[in-house]
Amino acid sequence: MELPFELSVALRYLMAKRKQTVISIITVISVLGVATGVMATVIALSLNAGFRNTLQRNLLGATAHIMVLEKEPGEGITDWRELTRSLAKRPHITQATPTLYTQVLIPGSRQPTGAVFKGIPEPKDVKLPAALRQLKQGRLDNWDDVRGLPPIVIGAGLARDAGLTLGDAVRIISPQGEITPFGPRLIEHQFRITGIFESGFYDLDSSWAFHQP
Image (cartoon, rainbow, N blue to C red; front, side):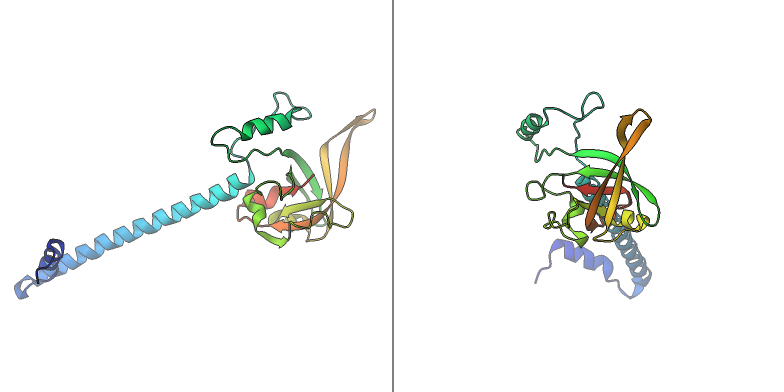
């Protein structure tokens, strides 16, 4: 039986005669060295690819790839409905969703904690951020069952730092308050924690909160 050319060459260099024992040992060491180098390269590339995919999924899944903002800071984009429909029809756009962002203060039972407060549309109407698809605690299908308070979903790190748990009533203080004769007055609202997410990305878990207006 005639062996394939590649196999015959490999056997020629791997199987030495009695007088070629040193050459055989050198061949084995060379093969092991090359195999170890290839294995280390494959492991390093796999770790790098896994880290990159996790970073992209968590970071870009919670924030938009492209954000369209108003020219001047104010009350937002007035014709946002028409703009959303127009953007959704453009090629290579998979989804266009209106959102609200603001910085807030959460005076929890442990310590006051700053957070990014993001308003998202009804979960059944849009594709949810990756961080909210697998909650650590709670559910997203009970937004209306919150015992009289609007729902809110917060990160696990934020809940830990502020001393909050699932089902707690939490106060949200916005610095963008009303102007009065005595100076600016902070706006305060109450919410019910209906979910706690943990994406594995520290910046998201420790400082983000989601609400369906």
